[in-house]
Length: 138
Image (cartoon, rainbow, N blue to C red; front, side, top):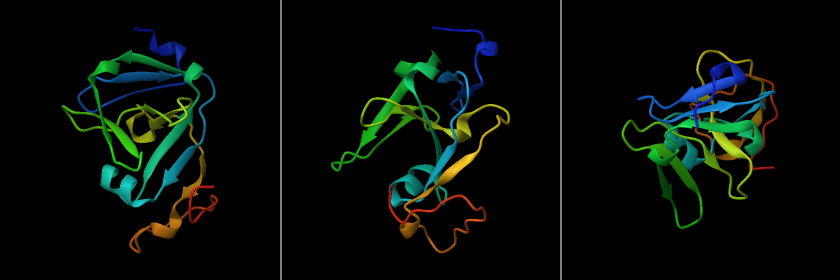
């Protein structure tokens, strides 16, 4: 399961280091979600994720250390129960993986694709970039 970090464009991990993953090739842009569920899970005004195709994603450690919480609506989040960090999870279609941008090590070269669910963002959140904004998911 373990591969050399040099084979990846970026690597990431949870706060305690038990869950680790690598991303191959070109990194996709970051998407920001401002919906109430993502805000509650992140504890911030939005959550930042990358949609990484499965063939560009690799588990390095701790895949079985993740916990899933799902709402009856089907919305879910995956996290490391020990430290509470968000963890990669497959999209409802199974591919790509949603990867939390904040878990990536260092400062990988990322761009921003846009903001979704801006219609439900709180007033105290100021979007200060010129990335596209959508009231709902496009």
